[in-house]
View 1 (cartoon, rainbow, N blue to C red):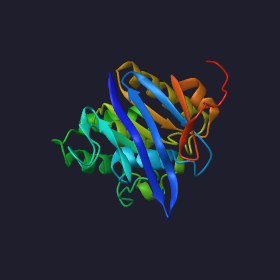
View 2 (tube, rainbow, N blue to C red):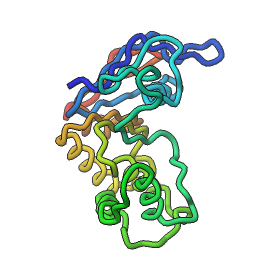
View 3 (cartoon, helix red, strand yellow):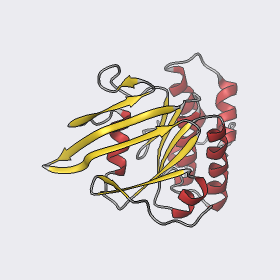
Length: 217
């Protein structure tokens, strides 16, 4: 099932087109890789899909609803774009509990399970300000998946993870794909793209071009 469609997307900053009449679509049960040089428009594309930025031209349809018409921001989605704004004086568990309770009834058992899923100690009282980069990234992934969203938009989700952490998160993403999620992954790691992605798109100058030549799985 098609879950996201971007049609004729144009986004400019100071007269320069970062997205240049770009068309792309994503379906459930697949992991999509978005690759390209810095400044090519990858993160801008994700921000437009999320509703953080508004297109100058074109439209975005998400789960049959038009962004900025039927809804202001993406719904039923877990997102990692740049560093999440965690409450650094609280533990990772407390952070997730606060965020989860915004739209849900408190569920400490679920939060503990999600933390364990991403390799964090659910019993730890360590404050987020003392987390390593890898621990913060695991917490960001926990935040993205804790409400069981249909869509995952992940910008460099392996950032800061050691080899063991990368292997664990790859396994998690592949499992989520099997549960019919739509996963869009921006990564500079060709290995992550090769191992995880069913389809690969390259953005250059705001346009889709022929995908990078990557080794087969």
